Amino acid sequence: MHEGSLQFAITPYLMFSVSVAAGISMLVAGLYYHFHRDRVKQLVHRQKLAKMILENKWYESEQVQHDGLFKDLPSGRPKERIRHFPKMYYRLKDGLIHIHVEITLGKYQDQLLHLEKKLESGLYCELVDKELKDSYLEYTLLYDTIANRISIEEVTAKDGRLKLMKSVYWEYDKLPHMLIAGGTGGGKTYFIFSLIEALARTNAMLYVLDPKNSDLADLSEVMPNVHHQKEDMMACLNQFYDSMMERSEAMKQMTGYKTGENYAYLGLPAHFLIFDEYVAFMEMLGKESSVVLTKLKRIVMLGRQAGYFLILACQRPDAKFLGDGIRDQFNFRVALGRMSEMGYSMMFGEVEKDFFLKQIKGRGYVDTGTSVISEFYTPLVPKGHNFIKEIGTLIRSRQDGQAACEAKAEGTD
Image 1: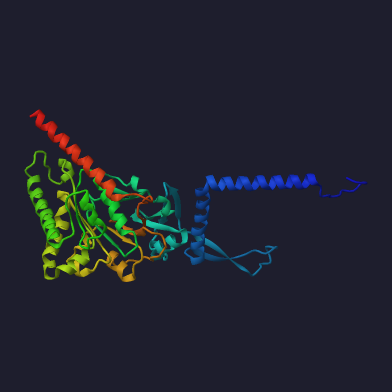
Image 2 (image 1 turned 45 degrees about the horizontal axis):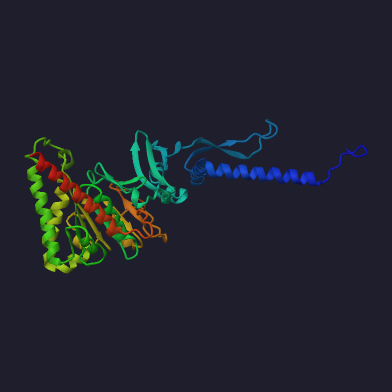
């Protein structure tokens, strides 16, 4: 108050107070966003879902007469009133977004049954599951996919499944055989090395075939059953096939055998045949390729029960060498790096999926056996990691353990 009137003056104290208040507000907002980022994202996602329904007019409405200022004098302007808005429930938990959509047999049912593309691109997520339940359809999407990438130390094989991302597993006991496709520079070789290193930590028997005598062939320095010569590879494949057939017969004679149970129930180790550049090898064989194809078909059909699994890698899964339904038996499929539309079609079949290219090494797409294709990142390999040395250490440790067990058993006898 000054001379009986109210006056506003900008003083240093006022400027300081406003600056401090604004700074504190921005700090609080920043801290909230940093520590409660998921809550902010949930609000954004819910708004996007509601906007999707409104802009596509997936609701039922009616026109009602809007009353004017005086009830006796109608305004003449009709107003839209929503009679039915589709029920949609959203939940974010453990990095997965669960969206339940009510199915009411209404005129917008077809649109609500096929929301995959809109949800993936609009929420920047990847669909990992789609399940129809009683009156509801549940879409499960992987939120912030790259954040679910793991390091090579976290890749573990246990209880018949191999962990490849925080929420992605290859359940080889239930969904056997893996097919890997990818061009040069896509991270295919490092991914195969990661699989071998993880399996070498278990009691699994490993067989590696590398017809081009490239990086995988170097494993012959530290582990057995690694081949790159044509004759040796054919002999290894025959050995793998014969061993599978022998185990299938022997399992039925074992004590504790039970119909419907597999090799793990009897305490037997799994066997993995890792076949790199498979298509190149088959082209090299010529007419002999039909013999190999016949045995591979038998392995993919009978291998799960006996514990014999295939990991085939190639640049493109040509149907010529994966015919007669063999390709359909590879339940876990990974496509890494840049691929053409034809390559994706060969890998996953004709699917309603938009494939995007990101310049990130080790990125691709995966079908874990559920016929749902989602974004995938291979395990991170630290700079300077020596696969040959690490795998060699694991193999020697296993051999030393087996030798100690055999010596102990002989001493007991």
